[in-house]
Length: 101
Image (cartoon, rainbow, N blue to C red; front, side):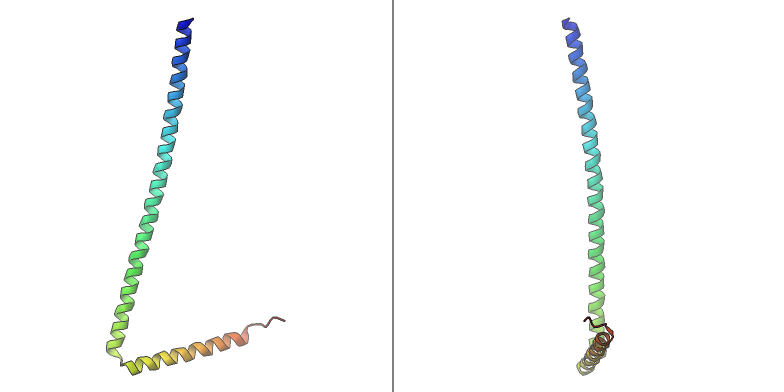
């Protein structure tokens, strides 16, 4: 009888060990999926950061070029013209929007 209980105990322990191993594999697989996703998102953020840096550098270069090409008076005149166009566009948009009762 004790041999039967020893055998049954060994079978139970084997089954428990197998279940625990399978759980460990599942946890490992989930951890690997999360790590891959985190690495992907990190790469995306790094790519966006580099693109924004490139864009900001190109804007600074353009501004420097314009400052070298145009005098301050010409730049101020262009800014005033842009502001006037913006005001006219806002007025036009306001005039065509339906008025609610």
